Length: 395
Ligand code: SF4
Ligand code: SF4
Image (cartoon, rainbow, N blue to C red; front, side, top):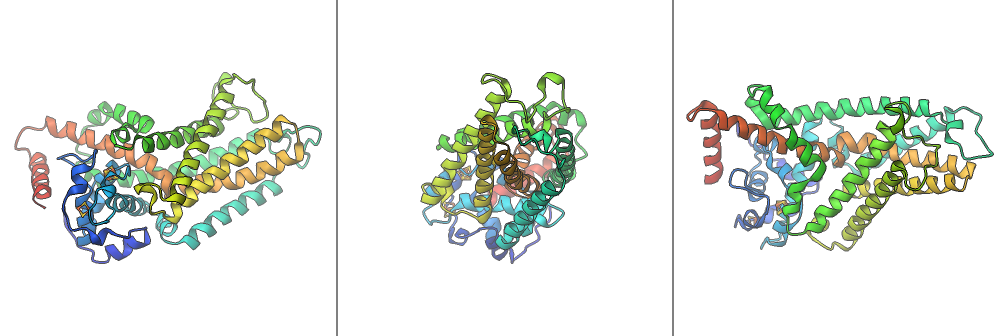
């Protein structure tokens, strides 16, 4: 791997939120206390060093930024206040922008003005679209969303949005895969990739490595937000009318009985997201622990959009329960004006993309490990890996 030096990287990373990494004097405390650092993949000191030396290539091909869950143990124990946990978070933002071939992610992360304008533009487009494209014959007797925006039209819009999002996210995921696997990407037999798929599923669903950190509350909050969001996404996008088998259809206009699975999923998602986002917002306002000390504008935007989407969803649910047509339709427009920008901008280009990259990288590391174990001692790849490990150890 070449070690091209980019001396502007420190300056560039400041746009992504880097503040104190220059204070590091490489004592190694942070790597020693990090519960997720291993001899094969040591961090975070190494990354602070890469940043200081401008080693962009090494950052681009490294899996370690995705192995960090930002528990903050390293920052709490740094004698210089260099905030290595934040340096890892900033590196993830930077990598997300490098994986994104459209260049949108970079703009989103480096310009607050651009971020706000992009969100407002999508919100206005959605609002106008809903006002212009409807049946023109709303039911004013009862709150009946299908009488204004029929579920087949919402389903089509969902499908179109899911197709665009999947294309953008998967092409970026492919670039992440190429950077992490390097020359091994297509040398490793498919059967090894297939044999480790369980890792991908387990890490996606449980984030179990986060549980090893000292502050398990951070893991819990992370898990609440992730599971709350994922379950409501499955319900309103994947299981909405017509996409699945009859008994599992989610229908917006049906008031399900209290113990119906969809009602329970809805309540769980609402509680989980509101709990997780409120905890994180209060933590960031109070700067109560290391991961909350430095908040990037995208951190705020992520929490605000998620909380507004949930709150407007709660209001729509209430107005439907009391059967108020006009407030239901108005609030539904507002709900969509918040939810759609969050989905189309955050999922492929910003914080939600981490949900895809992190488990993917953990999975790829297992694949690589399994492949290298199968190689005879002295094979070219093993030598390269050993040489790289030795280089890392001697840094
Ligand atoms: S970031 Fe802090 S703890 Fe880590 S090596 Fe640098 S000075 Fe030491
Ligand atoms: S924030 Fe936590 S997981 Fe990340 S490098 Fe620091 S100690 Fe390790």
